[in-house]
Image (cartoon, rainbow, N blue to C red; front, side):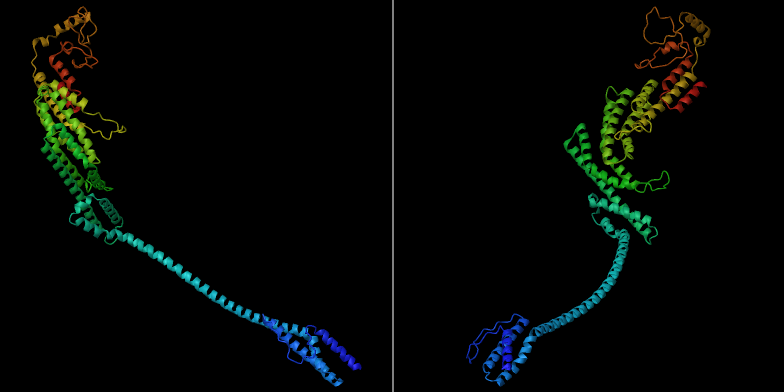
Length: 563
């Protein structure tokens, strides 16, 4: 009975442990009721479901076997059968934890294995990255070296190109300048660039004389520059010819008067002046003496510039010389100037001076300097010289020649100015143009003075009264007691104040009687009345010409008079 009681207690403990297993219906020997098995969500969940299912089956078998216990032998068999289950039930929690530990260990081993593999992979990648970095560094170093080489080669190529540019420019410019119709390129903008490039090439060749063929290229470039500047001269000449043809045609068709013709001449010549002036400047900029040139030498391209001056002067003179000649002839035939040398000179020189100023203004519209201006103006003055020179040579009156010299010196000869004084840009010096007329008048005046000296002084035969000095001195002493002051005024005085004769002044001042601006005037005939005639004539002559002739000629005349 005791054994049975113990066995019954064990059975109760087993029943208390397994509380989750549902009791089977009594006396149900059929199959268990159908249930829907829960689907596992994971591996561990699947494991729990299987174990729960197995426990339910074992519980059902124990209950069936327990229900079949009829004796102690059945109990002993039953107890032996469930003893192992009891042991397993007591250790089930630990086994479950152990199994979880096994699973965790397996999972950690897998993680360690994966981590080791990842570390190995990372180590391999690190080595690969280091190899790539070293290769990249080496590649970068090589690239930097290549870039340095490229820069060096590029700079060398640029230097070579810069040097070769001065050599490669020869062929294309030679083709352009020697091509048919090359004169048409003179008016284009690229022509100035071409001349600038030629200057650069010439300067480069002159600077780099150590280059192998620099002398050859320098001579060829100089020939091309001469060719280009010659094209400018040809175009300049052709343009002048076209202007002259147009003006001649207009004058011939319309039969213009002098005023309209003059306006036409200036208007037509001003139309194309700016363009042709710029072309002439291209030659003028290069017509410069090089440093160290000998004094008095001419620039290389000055001859081309002189040809421009000559072409303009010839073309312009073909129109202006007939106008000047006609005007001079009209003045020479006018009643008021036909016989009066001074009046003719005043009118003709004034008219020519106005024309010269107008022509100088027009010249400066064509050229930048006055190098050839005065040669042109002197050519315009030739008609004046042709009329004035014969009349001056045939003039026999010293006073007329003196008036002519005074007129030219006071009205047309400019006094020398200081170097620091400003000079007007549009002003011209008329002195060189009128100096030939002045020289002709001075030469004629000197000739007449010498003739007067020879005829009236050297060959003078004195009269008896000229040598009767006692009577003259007595007369002078009588006059001295009445008047101690000389009469210097040329104005009329009351008769009560006038002495019978005039006493000679101590320092006579000879001034023209007809000069309204003279400060001192007196009667020279009365002052020099008692002088010896040759002395009176000599003083009169010197007083007339001493301001009008050259100092050297005046000294010669004075020496001749004194001897």
